[in-house]
Image 1 (tube, rainbow, N blue to C red):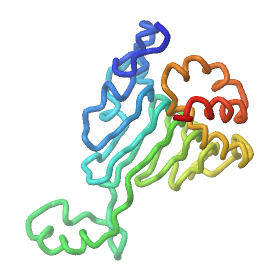
Image 2 (image 1 turned 180 degrees about the vertical axis):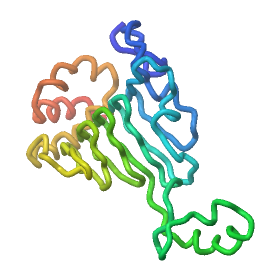
Image 3 (image 1 turned 135 degrees about the vertical axis):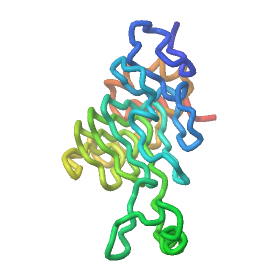
Length: 218
C-alpha cells in the first residue's frame, strides 16, 4: 500500500499507530473543517479531537485546518464563543444567564466585534500542550513550540514559542518561503507526494519548486 488512506481513522499502512488519528475521518462538527492527512496524537485515549482539544465550539466562527498538519497531545484550541465582553467596566457574561439580564444586555453583547475564524494552515506542527487563542491564523509550514500560548497570527514557516508565543526565527529565508508557498506540495496528488516524499522531507525549497512546475502545470 503506497500511502495511508486519509478517510480511515488510523493509518492503514501502520496498524500499530492506533494513537494517530486522521481528523478528516473523525471530526463531525459542522464548525470544523480539516484537510486530508492532518492528524492528532491522542496517546491512545480514544477521546475525539473535538472533545479533547476544541473548547467553546458553539459558533458562528469556524476552525479551519489544512492538509498534512500534525497536532501533538494536550493541545487546546479556544474558540471565540468562550470570550467574555471587554468593551466596558465588567467582563461578567450577564447575557449568558437569560431572563431580564439577557433582555437588558443582548444589544450590548451583540455590539461586541466578533473575532474571525481560527485557521491553521497546511504542514503546520503544533507541539505538545500548546494553546491556540480565538481568531488566530497560523500560516503554512509554521511550527508552534510545546506549551506555547499563541495569541496572535503566525507567519508562514515561522517558529514560535513561549507565553505569549513570539517568533523565534523563520525556518527559511523569505525568498525560499515564497518558493514553498508557490510550490504548495500539500496540494499535489498523493501519488506525487509519495514519489517525492524524500525531497519533501529533506530537500530544498528549490527542489520542490522545480517539481511543482511539472506537478501543478495543469
